[in-house]
Length: 249
Length: 249
Image (tube, rainbow over all chains, first blue to last red; front, top):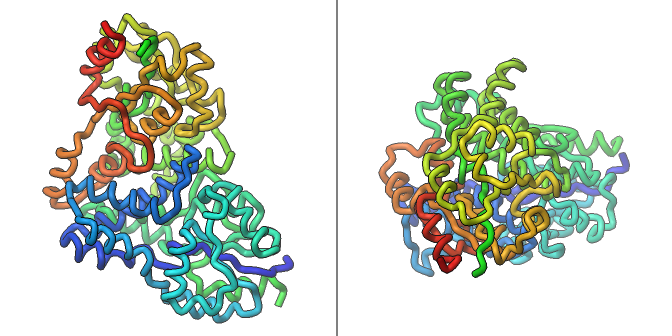
């Protein structure tokens, strides 16, 4: 393929959504893991439900709605300052350790983010991280007012970069995003942050399956309702070699 | 309001999705609760994702995809006969005990189901239950090839029954369905199968939050991303009085 660009999902692929755990647990000690997992699960559900209902609201709104839902299930009340402080954790996610070296090694290609995140959230995330200097653009579905995996959202990549899906490698750890990107013609690499054998071993061996394992079970595996990735790799570390191979270099 | 019809969601509202637990646990002893919960969680995720991708497949297909996903997370393999036997549990869900008396007491109104279920699944469910004789129709989103909460799905109710949303009371225990029905103009009664205080007490008191509690936390509460129900009632038992009141009787 004439590989011109590598386009990355942000949440869960370049940035670790689990890194809000310190903030959630400090806010409500003992409930951090539950809040972290349910918050993320509902956050994505709300992007899907709002898209289906034609009721787009940006990812910052959705992130706060999902947090409000999560705290309410526990019967917990956060005053406005505390609520804002927890929500802000999504603007300060840590980049995965494999992200910076991978982006640095992909210098031969145009690099961009394409994310559900609002423009302000992506600016905050990228601005705090060392990844920004490698990225040509951080594209937000906000321009399309619909979330992944709606095909209308992915159309933004070609419009903004001038690169056709067939000339771009899309990289995501999110199963629904893999299927959505594949459907519209991207070459797709799935980052397998939780290998299937590790997950099944953990699920079968666990004396109790808690929120963290439930999250892994629900959202880290390849989906069965859409197209599969072209390549599955263990981490971003394997990406430069794959991209070079695709580009015939 | 000029209440003419009462329209019911099926899965979780009239029929108990938890009633597959005996089958899942018999198939894979010790894993029944996990399979039951993840299966149902993914089943609904897949209706949303397929709708967003414009890749409709009927609820029987989606139900089997979700089961395949669930078993794969555990590293379990079911041969075709066992897989079919587990999947068939969705055609044999038990009606909630409050369903038959409620429908019997609503004889003054036109009564129908409007469900994600495929026509064949709904025929099997209703055919096995004592509810069929009270129901004028079992309407499936299949006619629209898109799932709840897409507004195009709900349009079927008026088309099939000739009753405008404003003249119908829609009844559901599913938060996303409440929001979807409310958005298109139905009067909506939410059945609160898991009261919020009970859930928060259970979550806070539990030594470990397992699959069943995670399911309740994720899918039994009112959503924060859409319109709220007009009325929230504890069970279907309270429905005849509400309907009579709305009809001014």
